[in-house]
Length: 302
Image (cartoon, rainbow, N blue to C red; front, side, top):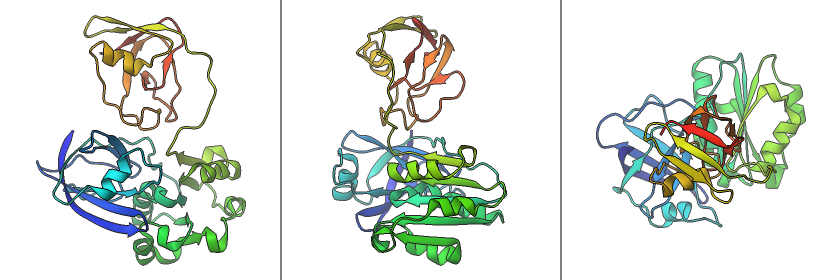
């Protein structure tokens, strides 16, 4: 974890604030567009937020938080109780949504999804690659960083206030894509579903706030051998591998517990995981908050 202090809290839209977290023990870890951090809040909750500042600024991180009406305690704490000067621990940045080199980009953002996309647009424009942003929200007042984007990028940015203009025509956007252009989309589930229907799968990169509802076979019990410690953990059918490891004295960092954030990533030395995450675990890795074993045994680097 890295030690930071809340340097600024600023409103950036209706029900959304920007946090600037300044490092207290030297430069913060580097990051690239698409990365996020775990923020350990003083109410014992850990939440994930996309970095939306400048990667060249190693002194501070910027994130933005929308106050969710059905908050489970994270956004409510940030909006109601967090104050300037508060010390906060943050994780090293992780990036499951990297910006892949391309001859052109179309960026699509919905609401607070702009936080992941904003640094990508900045990087694409700085590299001289053609890039545009379609940014969707209910009204202009609910869209974080709208003024900042218009001032910096002018006609490259199209703001779509759905209460007045309706939803953007993604099929038309797909038809007008430049050859080889990639599409990056971050926003609520209906937007992602519409983007997946409109754009070719090989050209669309998307990041989700929540996992897609999917059906898996009934969970089966298995055992997890911890190679470095020498113990074996029994994982019942009704318990996650993450919880079973914690109960056996092997607690792991965990944030979302939904297979979205990647904070609990484990290395698998032997056996075949049953991947139930929404990230796409790399070869030899798994996320034990949701994923299990396809066979009776896994060997873990623990």
